[in-house]
Structures are given as C-alpha cells and as structure tokens.
Image (cartoon, rainbow over all chains, first blue to last red):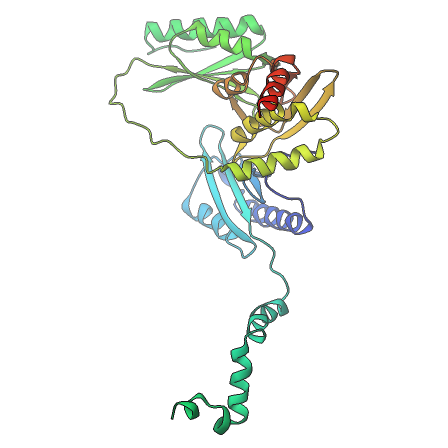
Length: 144
Length: 213
C-alpha cells in the first residue's frame, strides 16, 4: 500500500522492526502485573520523517521510573539511531517513535575505504622508496 | 448521565449547545465531559462519519470552542471549550516541523512516480499541493496510507491510518482551492475521503503562464 513517508521498505528495516517489537513485547510482559496486568504493545505504523517504527504500549495505569528506564534501555540498541517517547495520560498509553540507523556494510569495506586514497597518493610510493633505500631517497639527503 | 455539579451556568449552557449540535448530526452519539480549570473537554463517542461542513457548524455553534479534533485511533470526537479564567498569556514558542522543501519534494515525487498512470501531467501541481498538505499533517507521526484514484475528471482520495486530525488541519486542505470537495471523515472505518476536481480554470492559467514564458 502506498505510504506517504520518507522511509523505505527494505529487508533490513523489516528485521529491525521485528526485533524492536519483540524486545519491547518481552519487557512489557515482564511488567504486566497488578494495575498494569493488561498492558499490550501495538504497532501504530511507520514514521513519516525517517526509517523506523511507532509502537504503543496500551493500558498503562501505573507509571514508575524503573519501568520507563527499562523500556528506554531496551530501545538503546546499536541498530536504533534514536527514539522519542510520549506519555498520553488521556488514553493511558506510551508511544515510542523509534528511528533506525543505516545498515552497516561488511567489515572489509572499512579496510578498502582507507586503503584506496593511500594507494592513489604518490607520496606513499616516495615513502616506500625512502624505506627501501634511505641513503638515496631520503629528503634529508637532498637538504644536507 | 452527566453530573454538572460545581460547574458554572455558562459552562453548562455551552456544553448543552455543543452537544445538541453534535447530536443533530448523529443522534446516537454519547458524550462525556471533563472540566479542567482552563478548559472543558467534551468527548463524543459513536460518530460514524462527519463532514467538514458539519464540523464548521459545530465550531460556530459556540464562541468558546477552542479546538475540534477527531481521534481516529480511538474513534471519538474531542471538542475543547475555553473557560472563563483569566490567566497571564504566555506566548507559545513556534515549533518548527523540521521538514525541508527538498525532503518534501522528493517524498511526494516518489509517491507520484508510483501513481504516474493515475495522475495526469497537467494535474501534477494540484496533486502535489494536496499531498504536501497531508505530509505536513503527519510529519514525524505515523505515515498515512494515501489511495488516489481517477474517476473521469475527478481524483478521489482516501487517506487511511491517520491517528488524529484537527479541524484547522482540514481547513488548510480546503484553503487550497475550490477544487477540493466533499471532504468527510469516516470515524468508524478511520478513513478521510475527499475529491479533487479537475477544473478548467487552473489548467488555463497554467497554459497562459507557459505562453508568456
């Protein structure tokens, strides 16, 4: 269905959504007792301003700092760029808008990233010559 | 049943007027009130559908109406009434949306690309303006699902997955021009629907500008 949003629907996004939803559901279940026995997590949709997911914890009748802190800790993961939370006292709900970061490419690409500009630099080859025969190619030799 | 004890006569009258107005639109609506020191919140449940004209009629029914909001997620209509409390006026800082033109255009462009067979080239600017409006409403909130279909010379829009919509937001869409018509919110199915007419006026104006250039 055509969503009017900046976000893109990729496999990585789907994976992040599932993981975030599962993590939050697990934590919410552990706090579902007493007044908050009926707490449930619902997926409201995708944010328009970026790649992410909007999750709502419903039927929150009692708030405490440890519960909120745990929710925030669960959402402080490497694949999550940042998140906003909004407590709605009128509907007894907490809305988390989670934004995902860009997927990290393979480890080797980092190595190529710095190697390419170095290999293209002529100073690198001069440096190699200096190492190979310092007496002949060292810049100090020219100066002295 | 409503207990209006401890409420001023004027507040009661205002609630009564607004409630009567809403119930003329839909008889089976039930409402609840919440009286706060600065405002009274009226919540109407049981509305099936409401049009912009009907919402305007509700707004003009009482001068103390501050805001009219439809919570599509919960399926109710919220009306806020100002109370007669004089408080120091604090100037609210204007919040920026954080939505730049480039992002706006690229997002709308992407949407129009997928609807290239539906939207005519001559109507592109009008549809862009409509989509811009919807994107501004939902920016940094949940993305809306927009269905655009062409029926003859008209474009029929259906906006789904809207969480909440204010009357002032609907007015921004109406302000685009007379070609935005028949706007209605289906509260039960959580869909906003409207028509965009393909009038000859804006096409002719567009052609005249091109000739000048």
